[in-house]
Image (cartoon, rainbow, N blue to C red; front, side, top):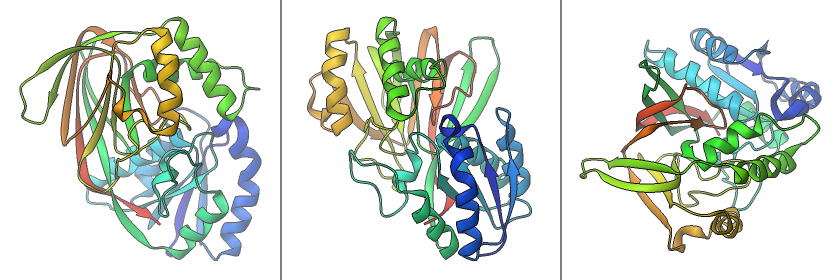
Length: 313
């Protein structure tokens, strides 16, 4: 493969990336990958690094977790508007690594992401496949209009509040322990959203929801298979809509989501669309790829970008 830029986020995975990166770098060199390294320490720094790197490198590799992938994808898609089409590589060194679960051979529902050693071999091989991406256009509560992209998925409601709470977990909590700590905190105080929804060209519908997730991928939060039938290259977004639930019902639903068997739950609705709009009178927190990329919003339009990403597989 031609020269690559590897963007390393040492803080990803609560320090896991910093610990594993020296071994991963050695493995890349041993596999014959010609690469430069850019290290990011500040939030959103990887966006600018990836956008610039797309102009000079054949591929930009995200070494970290889903948040690192999110920023790299945003940089690549910004560069794509100027005609640059660098490939995306992923070294899954984070906690959840949900996007890595999509890269062939895809992880089975309930499975973990592929290890970074397997990812090194894929990067060295240099084979590409087109993946869809998502775009979020938001009308924010502060009156601004903003947009961002996602690789894996976005949501409002319970999951977004969980992502906000995950950022407050003690640093010594790692992996699933951190996710379940955030889950416990979210159960204490979680939003119930009164939403108006539009799916493609269908008439709007109103509902009260605990969570609305719009996915390109199948899993978020490392363990929650919210849209287990989603495919990242079918030109469609998969949607999970859970109606208003009490704490007991949420606790009953969580194990089913972790197994990917919740689609038959009477308060869960699964569907597909190319464009989804969500509106609420109350300000909403938006989570995308485990990040909180936007201020509070009142109206968002989520659109699929078919084949927008070239991914090293």
